[in-house]
Amino acid sequence: MLRRLCATSRFSQARALHASYIACFASPVPEAAEASTQQWSPLSKRTGVIARKRGMTAMWDSNGARIPLTILQIENCQVTAHVEKPRRHSDPYVAVQIAASDRSAKNTTKAMLGHFEKAGVAPKRIVKEFEVTKDALLPVGTTLSAVHFVPGQFVDVVANSLGKGFAGVMKRWNFKGLRASHGVSVSHRSAGSTGQHQDPGRVFPGKKMAGRLGGKRITQQNLFVARIDTALNIIYVKGCVPGVDNAHVYISDATKKMVASAKVKMAKGKEPETWLPRGVDTLPFPAGTAEVAAQVADVIVAPAQGRNPWAPKE
Image (tube, rainbow, N blue to C red; front, side):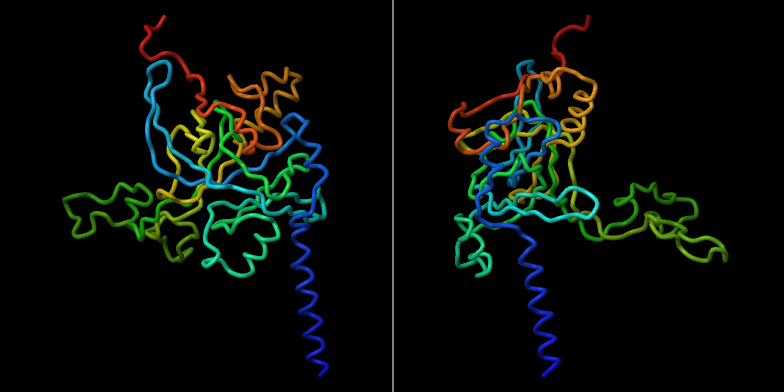
């Protein structure tokens, strides 16, 4: 009997700790209401969004240069919870929980159905947390749009790369391989020797060898936002994004070319107009919502980058 009571008490404590991880699901946040009148600053951290990679295309800018683009579409991306967790030696961890891509209630677990019902949103396929500052919190149920990112800015995109299976060292690590003739027999694509002498008598950890290639979480940094389509909720970024078509990706403001660069310029005392890249005055703060998208044009294109490739050099 005593054992059963101890087990019950431990179970109730574990349930209490787990339930306290998410501070509130649908409770109003006063900071989010006041943040609508604030302006973005390098000390603020906005939320990211969840999108789907739809494929690649190309467009021609005003200089006539062809730009390869990846199409990222936002599917009913909504805020479902606020998360706040204390940290011992730093500020509390504050985040918003974002969910995207509607799915039928039949294919959703009962636990997640209750979670989405409490947030007042439809069942979703994917849920992700994005760390933010307190001034960038959003009310639960807010719908994010493609206007969250401004054409001309840079973003980081996180996705799972293509899985290529078990690969040899020539494909996986770009090894040269052994000679094609003169003494090499049936070992042309071999890795060669991987060990040493009796001392140390082992293969060092981290040795480049054959193994599984791809299928890993990759962050593509500093991708240029060339165009947005608010009617279709599409973001066009310059360059390639890891993963297969229709896979979910996470998009956020570029850490290096946006946030860190703006912090350095602010520390040097430069004007706020120079903090962001050329052609970008400010960012929607705390976020670019569906209400903001209804007030702007359907298609917004970023100004051309660099010089005209057809103009003669001076």
